[in-house]
Image 1 (tube, rainbow, N blue to C red):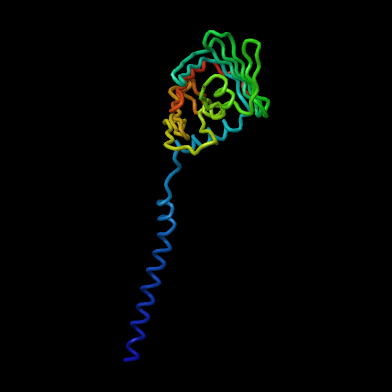
Image 2 (image 1 turned 45 degrees about the vertical axis):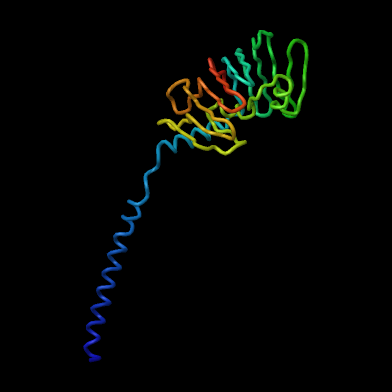
Length: 211
């Protein structure tokens, strides 16, 4: 009986070795086929975020329309954004001439009709002075077609070129309705921001030379 077990054991070992060698031969092909190919849309979105986040600033001209607390206005907008400082000129809101908003990185000022008001943040300044509820700090990113870092980016939607079309951040929803052209790094042309406190529409007529 013992002598008969050796041929059976040898046969079992041979079959096991053959099975293991077959698995080893198939494993590289299996692993290669199990890895999904890169998503072109996701790759384009990642490349876009990296390129636009690296910009030290921008310069744009266009028109802005705001509805806030039952009142509305429209104005021409000229915006110069630097790494730490920025300035906006709004021409024509309420037919009051020009409003100039500016930040030196530590405080924000509002100039209009020879008067100047200073506050620690633009949201406080606009809220207390004009009753506007506008997320200006987030607009610095939204206007480029990027989520703002202040809030998580929820319900993010991209177009076929990997460009953001919609995102919900905090109490606001941003929609990029149109881009300047069809290139992957094109900047927004029409933006709509909607929230409980206000609705803002921005039409960019021209982007100036980037710093």
